[in-house]
Length: 200
Image (cartoon, rainbow, N blue to C red; front, side, top):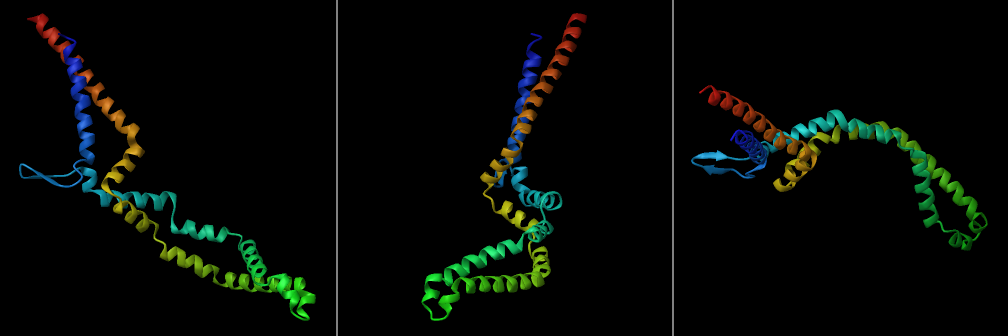
């Protein structure tokens, strides 16, 4: 008889937390129950949650300033030289140049000069515009808005799966914690009943 209160308390505690966790997500869409409009807390506040997640990401993890710094860290000379080499090699094929009178004698040398000239000019323009480019990224790339709109546009089922994937372990701990609390309360009740019954 004294075993029943802890067992019943554990089941009730676990079940209460299980239902409470489910009600965080369900129902996805508002429903009327006895005149009350009911909707899961997370679907109801999805936009606010999306904004909160986006704010945290921008402040703590990744912002437009980080993108600007990445741009600054790129070895533009190497990238430009590779692109120019590829473009010039494709367009000024040595075989074709050698067929042109006079140019054919200097085809390889000419390609080298063309590559150097183009690379130099492109880098000069890049250096002039680099600060403006960084500034444009900084002002036009709104990480917060991008993340907010992406999360807000998610299907509610996918949003629920995403959150579950992040906090599954914590939710399970809450369920078992509810069972443990119910079990402990049941033990206290059993002890009280035992002393009351024995006193009678």
